Length: 181
Image 1: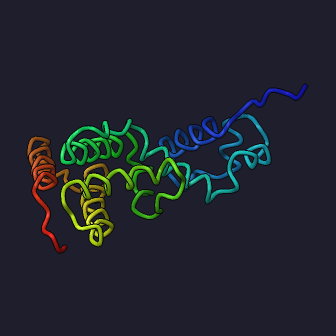
Image 2: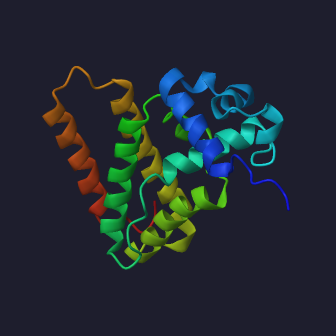
C-alpha cells in the first residue's frame, strides 16, 4: 500500500495564491510554494509541470473562484453575473489579478469561463463568426475595469461613483449587440 500524498493540485494552487496575495506575484516560485507546503520542490512536479503550469493554475483559480451562473439563466444575466464575479475576484486578489491580463485561460476549468461567455453571446444573437471577437472585447473591458479598480487607478473617485461606472458597464452588457462587430 502506497503512502497517502501530503499534498494535491488544489493544495499547491491554493498555497501559490496565498503566497501571491501576501507577497505579490513575483514571490510565487516552485521553491516558495514548496516551503509553504513543507515539501520538497520536486514534490510539486507531480501536480504542476513547472512555474508556467503553476501560473496557469492561478488563472484557473481566479476565473473559477465563483461558481458559474446557471446555464438556464438569460444570456444577459449570465454576462452580468460573470462580470460581477470577476470584479469581486479582483478586489479579493489585487496582487494576483493582473495575471488575467497577461496569461490566457488554458486549463479545462479556466477555458470553461470564456466558453460560457461565448455561449451567452451566441444566445444573444451575435453571429457565430463574431462570437470570439465579442468575447475578447467584453472580457477586456470587464477585466480592465476590475484590474484598474483593484490597482487603485480610480482612487480619486468616491466609491459610489466607481460603483455607478461599473453599473453602466453592466448595462452595456445587457444591450443587444450589433450583428457585425
